Every structure is written in C-alpha cells, then in structure tokens.
Figure 1 (cartoon, rainbow, N blue to C red):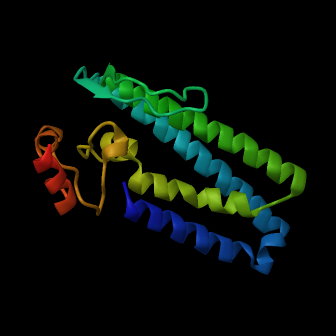
Figure 2: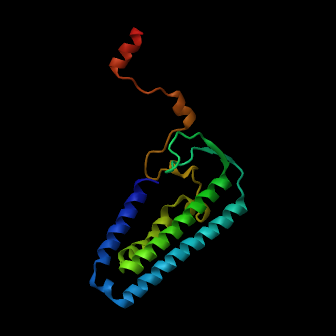
Figure 3: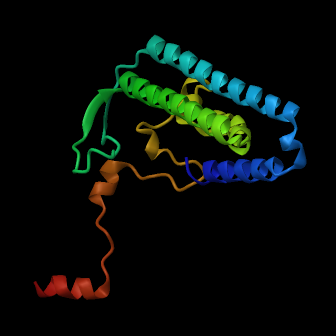
Length: 185
C-alpha cells in the first residue's frame, strides 16, 4: 500500500517507543494493563480473521487469478505464474495472517516472560490499528473496498501501475547512443 502504510507504521512505532520509556511502564498495574491490552489486540485480530474467513467463504469468488507466488526461503528459483481463484487466494492470505499473529503472540509472550520486556507488548498492542487501516484483507472484506489482487500490486498514494497490456506495447525510451547503434545494425 505504499508510503502511507510505512508512515503510519513508523509513527506508531516511534510514539509507542517514546511512551514506553516513561517511568510508569515499570508499575505492576501498568504491566498488567499492557498484558491485557496485548491479549485483547491479538484476540481482536484473530476474531477479525475468523470474520473475514466467513466472508471469503460466503462470497466464494471463483474469478480466476494469475499471480507469481511469493519468494520463500526454500524456493529460490524463478517461479511460474500460478492460477488460482480469488477465494483461494484470499483464504491463503488470511491463513498466512493468522499464522503470523499466532507466531508473533508466542514469541512476544516468551520474550516478556523470560526477560520482563514490556516495550514489544506496548508496540504490538497498537499494531492492530495499522492492520485495520491498511491491510488489503481488512479493506476488502470488512470495509468493502475493491482491491487489486495480488495484494502486492496495490498502491496507495503512489503512482498507479499501467495496464499490463498497454505496458507491453510501449517500448522503453532509448538513449541517443542506443539509437545510433540500432541504425548501424
């Protein structure tokens, strides 16, 4: 989604980091409140993911979608385009989001329990707001916005990509030396 997402994420991180340096962060009541806020944030995200899952299955959009799968640690070669339906793509993205939430929760719980660090709990308690504003899944299935799939192609407050068929017909502009070389051939 571009620069707006990065700016809001940066602003939330900086604001929460500055607040977490305050003296009240070591107060046991504050720590308990942070634990509750973090737990509620994670539960709200999981509830939203369950709601979106129901919406995705209810729509059952069988529109065919072609996309290149995301590069992964184990898949380093060039991958061909994959053909899937919008419903399957959205379900895969939703499942990926749920896995991220669960792994993040476990890791932060371990870090907090072992080293008594409260700053990540505080930051992640507000990370849900960023998801609500900018996640393509939320924007599509909660707010009803029409979002381009694959989600990586969405641009908010940036130059919109050209139509791929029109972009294929346009030749890149050549430098004068390239033009001379082409004439010689």
